[in-house]
Amino acid sequence: MSAPTMRAIQVHAFGGPEVLTYERVPLPEPAPGEVLIRVHAAGLNPPDWYARTGFATLPSTIRPELRLPFTPGSDVSGVVAKVGSGVTQWRVGDPVFGLVRFPQLNNGGKGYAEYTTSPSAHLARKPANLSHIQAAAVPMSALTAYQFLFDHIKPLPGTTVVINGAAGGVGHFLVQLAKLRQARVIAIASGRHEAFLHKIGADEFIDYTTTDVQHVLRDVDHLIDTVGGPQGHRFVPLVRTGGTISPVFFGEYHREEAAHRRITLPAGQVHSDGHQMNQLAHLIEGGRICVGVDSTYSLPDAAKAHERAELGHIQGKIVLSVVEE
Image (tube, rainbow, N blue to C red; front, side):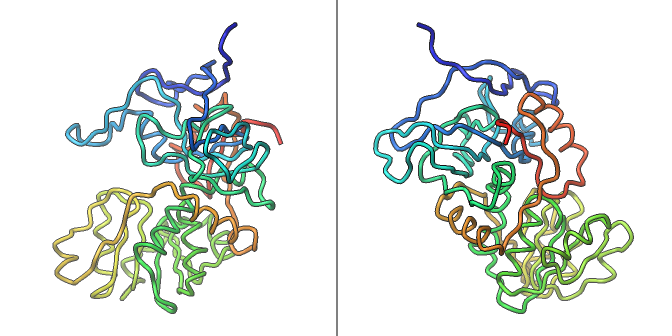
């Protein structure tokens, strides 16, 4: 009798979106403390395409070694299909979502698949008011925003929080969570996102395509840069002495100049956390956080989803639909 199989996306060689192949692979079994999830939807995240390229943008001296082949994806929403030994908080049929095994490499979430396994502690119950598509757009981006604001920066009520790249996956959650901390939120994005960002709580909006932020911002308390890159240092003069700049992605921030002005750079690697996912689920069910979905693609069209991601200018998240809802 042959072993059970499922459909999944596999990467057999590093490269562009075309290396994502849709094929049959063995059905996984949950280890002790894990559950098997029937995946209904999987979210796309930058680490997915970084891994797909073999982290080609990183210097070879610090480049992680990935074993081939592998299945990308860490953000999933689905239904518990099987429970491993020692698991008491989940039952078969429970709707769950979460960031799975991140930032683990070589045994990651494997979310681009019909089924995946997850440690039970990485999951929360899916909010009843979200579809699986919407729920799959939450985990990594919302946890990044949550951990930056609640674990690393901790802005006080009334302080100014500027978010560069405010319409993206992490950015649109940062806007909403910063408002929950009673901050004054200034969102930086292209003009087509202005109405969306005001709708979700931004107090002010700056269109970086028509306005030089260096001419309109001064004495910022906290700046969170979700874009990064070699020009990140342009924000240093805009932050008050003793303020903070938090890079979500790699960037050049002239750290000596920042240190001279007592500007710190609080940040951290996002990590799986079922408890924090549960906090986010309560906020979503209470209508205090909405979820932006840029576009959806079927699982076999994962390569097209990655092509869309590489175009940039994303509003919310890109999601793979695994089960038709």
